[in-house]
Image 1 (spheres, rainbow, N blue to C red):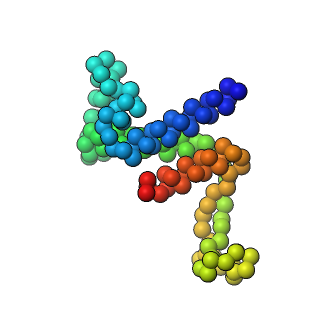
Image 2: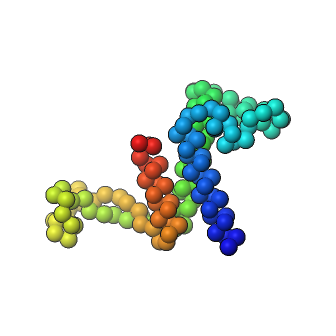
Image 3: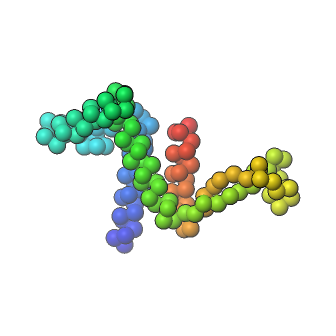
Length: 134
């Protein structure tokens, strides 16, 4: 039961992180990183993001989004490497089942297949990330 709770927490954190990145809302991102307020940890956190902004050539908010996006990607990659496997699928120009189409190299496209329910959940998250939030 503890492992299940840990997975739920990890998935919730990854999704919350990505939602914060999509929002580009400075306050929401600072809340996610727990860097709001006058504490020394909060000040150090904000300094880190200001430094990151200089490195990436963006604003402070750009840096918050940058690091949140990177974190969401890392979270997804970690789980997907454990619970999914790469797969090639066949794209049908006519929309018919691949069994009734000629197979050709130019019709192959990459995909992923989940090994279990957790893999299926992260495969959905993967497609959300790949869509660019659209």
